[in-house]
Picture (cartoon, rainbow, N blue to C red):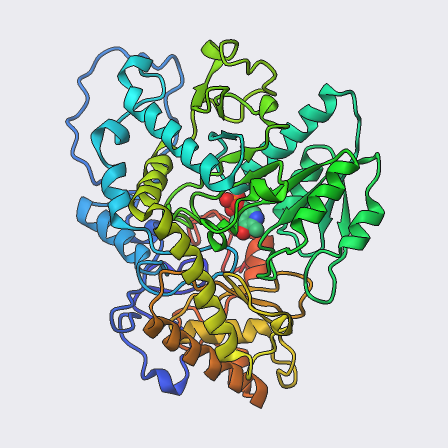
Length: 535
Ligand SMILES: *Cc1c(COP(=O)(O)O)cnc(C)c1O
């Protein structure tokens, strides 16, 4: 129990150099109900066990010489010790169920409990992908009905439901574009991506074998249409454009962009991660989009960020639908949406699918939740989701633009997220310092240093599920730290002051992670990591 862990901290010793305001150190290292937690290896020992098994009966050993020759080295903990360990760890997370989560572009909105109830119904929760089809008709009907509403809401022709995240959906969409080009014997090599694109866009295009070229933004933070038109040509396979874009602005020229790209023989991929700002108001199909992923875990409120897997269905235009991977869902001549699989692909004339993205249908648990969300909101409710998301973001933008620089504040209302820059901060105080100070105020920081087109960017997405009172409290906190940043308050440089671990070096942690625990000073062994200064 008293072995120092890799950071040198011992249970029962005070955590760190708390500042004076934080009060005296405690004997336990706990701070009120914020409980310290050692590694599981430091709680249990290899000498104890949490289970009580009878001694094996002597008999012949059937391990074929593969029996373990050393101790396994895992700590033994009783059931209550194990449960307390993981519960204490879980309490150290920030979560959407604890408070406002302003992470821009991530759409951290409330996950309605109705969705959870539906997802837990045994007919959905307990299905197995290899069950006979006749026993899962209802589950397939859910997939089909969700597909129908996604097609309806986006004004598109078909949808591949199986991609398992936004980035996976991007890959699916780009592979459809490649299949369509290959089918007409057209070997185009370039995908155009705006400067403000989410990092997954150029990564996807490069992964699919395309050369990525930037398109500049204009002073309004939108794609420069003339620059885009000037670059189009027979080598351009398509463009990837986020709309609303990552500056929180609607690309007003989207239709003109699509027309120009189509005229030049290319395809239009729209990154639909921000669909929550326009759902029920705008149909991407009407804007000439050929492929767009929808993050069910953003727009349609399914849990994410540690709470659940992603799901990124891709809606496709009539031009790209024939190449959509199996299983695929599309409108047929009768106007009805049908789920197409290997068995019935010929019947529905879907014979050019480029392949599959996943072994089975995708994230069933996310489909049930997203459909519950869509049906419980209805058309009017979904429209209000978009309107309230935009209203809340504009409330934050306008409430703070007198203390925080809003680079595109002049170009009209924002969509669902408010973007600020670090202009006006005193001395060497940075966006990072301000974000760390927000932790002291009890908030998960906003998205920082993205999009890259704004210096010291802070991207705040409140979502529609926050009340005015919650927004006012957040605005008050952000206003206060922004004022301190402008006044040159040096205490920001050492924030957070109230977090148990103070300021961590995330870059070092990401570049040189220490993922293995080493027993401190094993007899005759090498010195432990902390003695080597391994942190
Ligand atoms: C979240 C996001 C993505 C990627 O989606 P994942 O589900 O995280 O893979 C892509 N583009 C934008 C604009 C996003 O916000």
